[in-house]
Length: 98
Image (cartoon, rainbow, N blue to C red):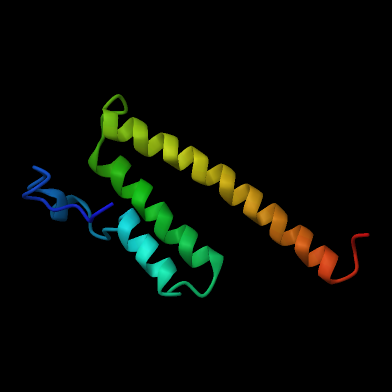
């Protein structure tokens, strides 16, 4: 969950390919520090994690890409569920759902 280290991770051109790096460790730290003021800010940063992974790891059969794509699918599902529950709570709080 650490940021990519081009030397440690044997990815010398990472910083040339990825212009807006984001990783799960930074994302988690930002959640802990209440950095995100809206859910959409969180989802945008999480999207960068997957976008960067797919951009740098072009081979869809590589282990890292398979893991990335699987986690991306799970996050899309969770985002859909989170939106559903936000709407449901809004309806309940506004007396529109009994």
